[in-house]
Length: 245
Image (cartoon, rainbow, N blue to C red):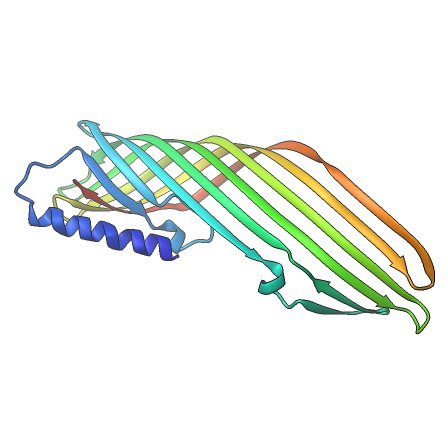
């Protein structure tokens, strides 16, 4: 939420400087921001660069990046009581997580004027997406059956999931020219994306008990890969504010 707002403030500053020099010749380049992430949950590219290479013909690049991280030990309650038939407590130890998401869209579209202010456009975006999600989970569980019977579990898990997607998105939009430099727009699209998933898993469960001195360990390690094709209709894929340089 903060990043699009900060980007908008920077662009407004650029626009005010450009308006102060409005007597200069206008460039074929425009810089802007996509604010659709403010009205819906799915992340959208935020920075937009447009180039008017021919009358009513435009090339457009959208770039978006997000990064988040934390630790379950501090984000959640460290001690979680499990209310079941067995008295038990699970303690969350050091359990970091992170997520990095990069999205690129390179598109071409053509415009058609409705009147002096309004125009509509249609075209195609080519999509590249890459997301790396990592989480580590360390748990210690104690179950008390009786004063003489207590069971302990230690769970250690590390999972890294890498997603790489390629696709296309036919799009349709409306534009409104506030003045010679400032433009706002609305866009919708239908996207078809082929995603490749790669997941590395390292999981170990160790259990012992006071009434049984033996220690049992279950270990799962390995990598798996799979593919999915996603078709999505997004009625609000773009809420643009752009400034002609």
